[in-house]
Length: 345
Image (spheres, rainbow, N blue to C red):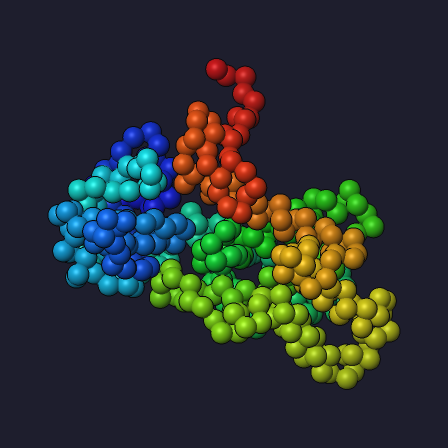
């Protein structure tokens, strides 16, 4: 059988059942019961970019085989994948086997296309922050990348809604910087140095809230992330790095002669981190109160929601031709987008 990723399988099954093999990690395994109190096993399978839920009913030939599987196991699952009317992506006549050490290592690295994209996105982040003209903001960003770059590249953009994969935070941040670079010439009053730095740091607290270990695809919960949240963690990170780059008295004295003032830079950057969710009901302690803060909020929301649309179509239940069930937190049912113009039939 052809080896495919879960995303490739998900994209293929709307055209019909697919005979395939997938290498996955068992993210969770739970014994459950139906409304009629019949037992079944629920497996959540994950790879580098997607996950699926496999329900194994008590009359399924592989029901007893669930006893030999455990959370965190790396397995190959081979069978016929199809689109279940109620549950979405499903599989039948499937079998599993443990992955070899080589197969496990390859799975953890992610598919080549995703690795290449995230590497290019990371290079773009480094180059874009490296072009910041204000030496204070440049030094702050460089220190963050040097100190936390490896952890940044292993963190997700969110736990479930968008860019919920290892390296997803890199993809999200790079795309936001691309949008900022495009709109800055249209709004010349925007401070692009500040906006780029704000984009780099706006989700920096997710390095703890949404960090994935190199040993699997399951995102653990972090006590600091749970108790403080990524916005407060990001603000604390900005302050700690700021103190570090100003530790050299001679350097600080030289920088203090520049405009804008050092303390103004710190306060405005903290405001971008604090206000990037836009509204208090969404977790920000303050509303955006500067042009850069408002721009950051809209750029962040735009990239996150478009990612939700793209990821939503393959998993949303069809309600009618070209109409799909709502995928939260998007506000309504999804409608198939209009195709791009082509002069070929």
